[in-house]
Image (tube, rainbow, N blue to C red; front, side, top):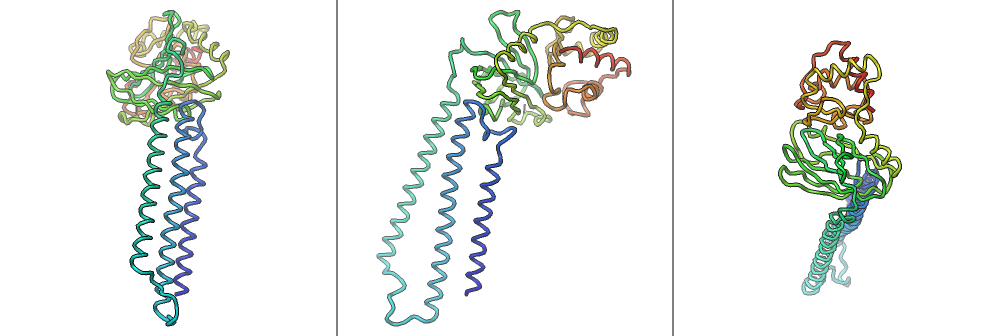
Length: 359
Ligand code: CUA
């Protein structure tokens, strides 16, 4: 019997250690792309709600395990004592059935009331968080407005301005000023996508034909990775984007630079590169403002050299990666809409020279 008890104790310790490990891992889950490292108003509320649920559920878990172990130990002890040396004068081991019944009823009712109370707290907190997360952060007129369109598999980002000459389009990288409320108007061009920057805000679905919107406000400067959160086809996982929150001066300098048309080719190879671009299938899908290329099917390349990644966060924006992408993007991201390009080595180098000059 003593051996059995020892084994039971060992199991209890194992269970408790495992639970502690789980808690430790969940505490480590901050960092990179995580709603548990909030850097903006929306994510702040979501993370608060998550931690409330985590702590309450942890306490409930520990209580349930403790009650189970107590019941097991109690049953074993009773078994032990009834089996052998019960002295005649001893107090009865088993309480009268009425008293047992009364105690059981009290325990069950107490647990039930506690459970309902906890669920109500969760319900109310979820409702309040949902309301706070979707509430406008300012009046629409005062906000910086950005239109984001989800495509298979990249993000079109358009900065709206009352002055049409100041509007511009970019892709997959959304710059915003720190501390300023940003209204993101969402559309989908093909299938359902979902806009999600965990460190800043909750998810919002983009449903074709049903415009939606979400408010962002970054309270800390940083680069926050976002991800399409709705399965949207073969390359759903490679549909990332970045929100780059920067101090106001930096943001307005970036915006002014983006509003300009593209740099004119400065060297003979860049000039040749531009010709390659304008005479190859590239011109059928891409725009480079300031040239004849004005198609809006694929990302706007007017300032492609100012971006950190290409193909919706799939590759780093480096010369070799860009070359690989242009020649045969299907090997990198199968199923995407860009066809392979059969360019000679000189043409490719000239084209890369030109694209790298588009800061
Ligand atoms: Cu777009 Cu998943």
